[in-house]
Length: 62
Image (cartoon, rainbow, N blue to C red; front, side, top):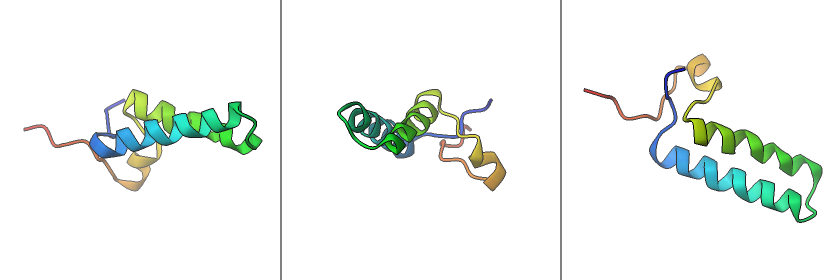
């Protein structure tokens, strides 16, 4: 797995995922547990859908 999530994208994924999980824990709707997905992809720096779409937000290494 080559890292394809970087910078602002990574920070947003972690914050959004943590917020959704916290909401679910505090009695929010069951669908809020979907926050596990953006949190995990932000932490491991890899999104499985980005290669399918030909995307990468990681800076290019020279």
